[in-house]
Amino acid sequence: MMGEQSSPGNGHDPPLVRKTLDEVLAKEITSLLDIDSTTALEAYNLTTLACIVVAVDREREIVDFSDSPPERYTRPSFIADLFEMGINSKDELDHDLTAVIDMGYLSINTAGTLQAEASACTMVSLLNTMFPGMQGMNLVAFVMQMNDEVVSGRKSLEMAKQSLSQTLKSRGLAINREKAEAAVRSVQTPGGGINKSSVLPASPVNRAVSSQLKENASKRIASLRSRRLSSKPAVYSSIGHDSERSTVKDVFDKEPSEAAIAAEQERQRAEQTTREFAEIQTRLREAEERSRQLEAREKDLKQAEDAARDVEQRIQKRVADEAAAMAEKEAELQARADEIKAAEQRIRLEKEAMEKAVLDRQRDGAQKPESEPEPEPDLVDEADLASRIAAFEAELAMPCPICLDGKIVSETTSKNKTYYTCSNRACRFVSWEKPYHFECPLCKNPFLTEFTTPSGDKGLKCPRASCTYSQNNLLDPRQNQAAEARPVKKKKKLVRRVKRRL
Image (cartoon, rainbow, N blue to C red; front, side, top):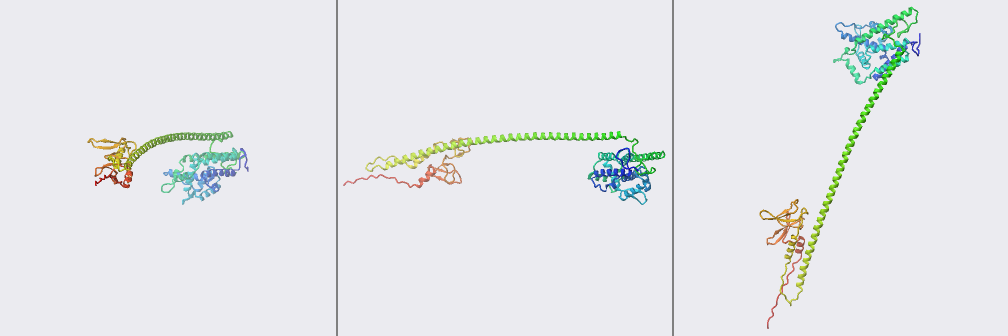
């Protein structure tokens, strides 16, 4: 027997080669399914997959050709068919078939024939989804060819492991939960049955591959027998050491040379480099697009900041202008208030001077001796003097008590009726009675109006309807209250005594 060798040309132990390739196959399938790989070797080895694919393909043929369906496999016919394909020896196939039945992929019905279960249909659907370029028997044929190349010595075991792993990785698609559920739904009918016709849509290809496997196995067996008859060393097959039971499998007619293998590896590396370069270009385009988007966002942000800054500057300028206008208005009002205050002060001083002159004149008249009576001068009544002073004040330009800007002027209506209004056209002050710049001592109204008392004298009253203040003279209400508080002085009368003659 020949042990494992490290280089092509010497061949390898067939059981070891089959076990090694089965481990690679199970590892790659479980990585795509993302499941535990400790028990995967029993379900995802070459013999198990071949049994499941062949059985499911026969179920599909029975459904597609319902008019003249092929017969179901019996246990012996199933083993014989797989043996002709070179899958394994008949004894090992019998053992492997029992294991597949125990796992629930196949079952024996009451007629003693084999039929594929739902789990087998689901398995084939998942394999087709994982390896869309190697569906059905194509995957089995590819692994068998790799096995034959190592056993015949055309390829080293290590190179075969790497080639099988790289091919399954590059052509395999990971199966997530959604894809797995879609694969399960694809083999189920609306009533919950199995839609076996949807599992292997390329059944003619499977039959062609199976036929090619059988033909190649037969040719290889005949070649081995002729080599034995000519005393040439026999080449060990993947089944065992007996040339009559051995079947070396070759899917393709032309065996690849070392140069072809190296060229294939170089092509795969070039494809990998191309894919990596395409990915890099894609990432660069994405980065450029993100950069353009960031530049556009920065431009928009800068424009928004400039607009906000412009609005803020306009607001600040408007606030400053309004503040300056307010300050100017306040200064103007303060100047007018000072002017009014100065006018009031001047009026008060003139009034005090007139009152003092009247009092001095009265005091000088009281100090004259009785012995020298003089013609009685025209006495000036104090109330009349006060009225005159009030009239003098009224004659002065009275500022408007409402807007404080204009002056109170008298105007005449179309019916020659006099009324009083403000010289400032923007002010709404108007009154039928003549206003006086005296504050009402009761309600603090800024002005009083003139009225005629029942005795015919002029008096002042508050224009507000809710206020009852009035006085019977035109004095300042403060002076009027002070005058009412002072006792009225009695006038001295000069009495001339006539001397009696004795």
